[in-house]
Amino acid sequence: MSAQRALDVQGVDSGYGEAQVLYDLSLHVDADEIVCIIGPNGAGKSTVLKTVFGLLDPWAGQITVGDTDITHTAPEDLVRKGVGYVPQVENVFGSLTIDENLRMGGVAKESGLESTIDGLYDRFPVLEEKREAKARTLSGGQRQVLALARALVMEPDVLLIDEPSAGLAPNIVQDVFQNVKKVNELGTAILMVEQNAKEGLGISDRGYVLDQGSVEFEDRAGDLLDNPEVSRLYLGG
Image (cartoon, rainbow, N blue to C red; front, side, top):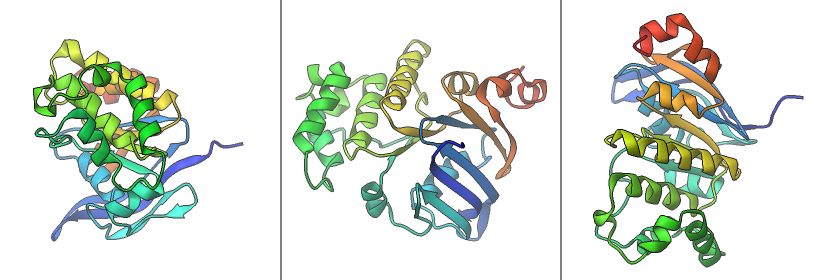
């Protein structure tokens, strides 16, 4: 029996204005998976996430979450349908405290906000320790933890994460990826874009290699890491 699909993207074309970026793109994420998208700069990786999250309207194709068609759904409605998004930049409100950031993440939550936030403090103790601190005072790694937690306030079934290691010192990257893995282990499927291909694939179940807006390779993450052609073209091997 096949695993339950958390996210299914089929035959999607998308882009900006008249500039097409994605071409007949198909990928999926099963309910228990971390799936990593890698590829060169300009391949369309972040465009995939923006299209899934409704920041870009797909020109063709279909996107479903579970059994629900979300192809032309606005972001504010997607968070109610179980989709979360952590952008690469501007992913927290620097002038607000950690606690205020988490409450902003739950503005569309109809009930259970307090218990959900308490659970996130238990899950991420660094946030509990600094709950009254302004987000701008946090380190890069701590800001990424806060961005993850903000997206989790709505308890998404699928979390889209854009470049979680971007701009972080190497010694912090491992901590951030471990937090991503922890989120997945607690029941959230993850589609992640990551420029640090080896680290991203290292915590993932499967991966896709994007090039010029199309899938060039799809495989188990370990097999992509071991693929000599993928290594030569995309991993610097």
